Image (cartoon, rainbow, N blue to C red; front, side, top):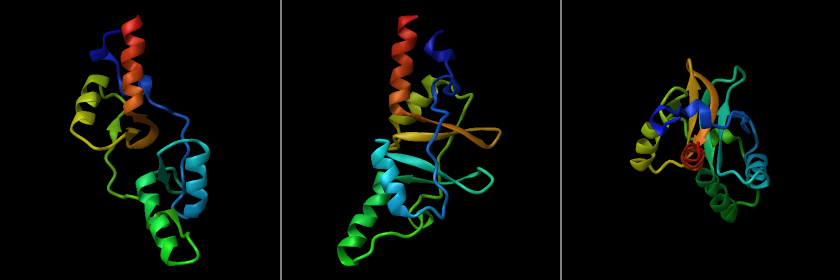
Length: 134
């Protein structure tokens, strides 16, 4: 399959670690570290995407805990709510171009406005490697 016809849905991660807005941020940090991931989507009770929590967002906890004794609070207080997403049907080539003009490392993937996965820069590189072998 040529890279121009490969789509996000073919290379995205579908089995995601997700947080709820009420998740304690220290629990979320523990999960990010344990699973060696740099961020995760935040979903409401219906599974709708309501934000993203990244390592960068969590750095605020480090700073706050240096002034206060108890780090913590809900993920909702730290997550980014203006989330850029991509569609599952987007081509990998178009996504690579989008990554080139963005500082983001990953995008949540939507299909019919529902969260179905996440795709990272590494996934795009994996697509190139896999497609160059076929």
